[in-house]
Image (cartoon, rainbow, N blue to C red):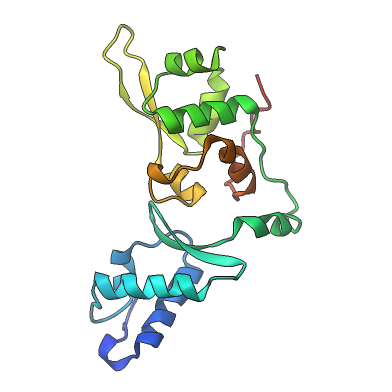
Length: 199
């Protein structure tokens, strides 16, 4: 951004509006380090964080909220209002089979896990398409290999998984019963492949 504004010549309120504007138009979450680059003279992390928390309060009671995720800060629709916005869409968001949701939950809450671990917990064979669906969405990835015969891959969730759920870390994961409801409400990226319909 060329010709940033000097913090000293602006009120705190104006600095807050600059942060708000940047976050409203950003295509994805912005980290505090990125937000500091909006200004010609660095306001420092403490001031930026304080203003972000003020913005969180300013947006209370509205249909949109400012949240912090693993990737930074972003505005998003409150989950309870997403159902209304979905009525404007021509395409329905992908729905995931029970097998996909159960596999995702096992990986999220027990990670890192192998395919064999998932099968032991679910009691059925895990379809290759289930894992491919989760990898294609960018929610899970192989993060290593277990030191056992065959060296099976260890699956774990990704930063994108946290961002899509609006979480800062795995410690903020909701109870298992809430995962499916949240995934149904979150606006998810489309892929060329159809969603897995079941096993």
